[in-house]
Figure 1 (cartoon, one colour):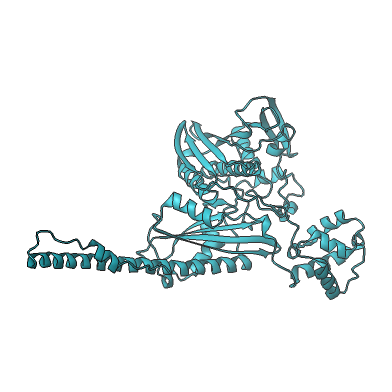
Figure 2: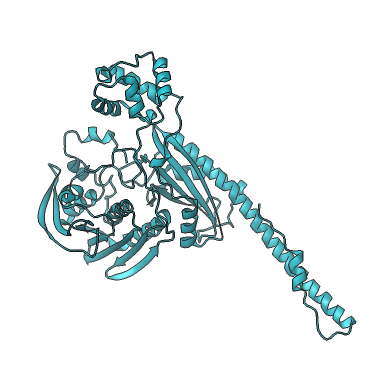
Length: 505
């Protein structure tokens, strides 16, 4: 996942850990209720990513225990890759440590992962984070870690051998939290996680009692995503400077071809001719002004193809329909998708499912379930562009009304999700995303209209069938009496043949 470079300027004079310590509310840790939910979410995201990297169906167990009033212990364990011993301190106790800085879809963002939750636990209970992890090639380790906030460095309190049953990781964080108020949110999050990741299994244990076990609705793992070169439309000055620093003595023409996707030799030649720049100029001789001009031209250049979709992992039609059906048991389903396309060079796909009869209340606007990179979004829906686009559709013209319970499940996957804040709960309004979401919603609306009409026709046909059945039974009875027959002939086969019509569109 791409790093949000705008954050660097904000904490250039302080450490990243100190910055997020001061802005923990922005990062989803504003109150004890939301803190429990955010801690579970960060740990579960890491767990599922680790399992997918190991090409295993995730089996994730979430345990929440209330030690005393206001103090909660959250433990999440998985069957993922595990973490090598040498990487444990930095991976868990250092902010902005990781490899999520390339064009590849991941659940996490900003490089925070579990570290923000550990920071919150540390400052509210003065307790270390406990990590038990084991890889397939090493023995298990047990570590107790704190974070040196001022210097953004891990502090190791304990590090010893500890065998697990198999590879994977278990993380425990003790924090100030409100279990009663967060319980429903955590349940909803895990349930919806099995919708967006139907290949995963979730278990929730609260105070020693198993509350839920669900998932593994779809057996096939998502295809592994690949790291793609940046798209030219994302070529800001900072990206160009980093690419140029690694380019050495390459010519400008070769630099463009080798550094960007959708920039073949002919396209690069045409682009540089349009820009009136010598294609043989050595790239590291370009001035800051040259790079600024080059970046501006790349971002506005129209002669480029769509971004590579191999870096994205949509849920997919079969898996999405199966998971919604397994969790919500609707009476009818339809699927649609748009993309891949891009915003500022960041590839994205939007996909959705419209479901009838999911237990949602009937209303003129469908109930919306939002997902970003397979992560359910449960807060700040009023600020989210997906929710805003839903309200822009005239659902009445598609047959959705106060008597029709309809739910819409929308999933945006991208190499970079434009979240409005570090809490990662609402998606910012961008014209490219708005256009694709609105087009998808209207497509789902048209499919809904056909489905609802088929349903209405089926109801009418069923009523007619009952009326014909009653009438034909009377005719058969009268006929038998007139013919002085003791047995009344069955009319079932005749009625079946009369109404044997396929109404599918």
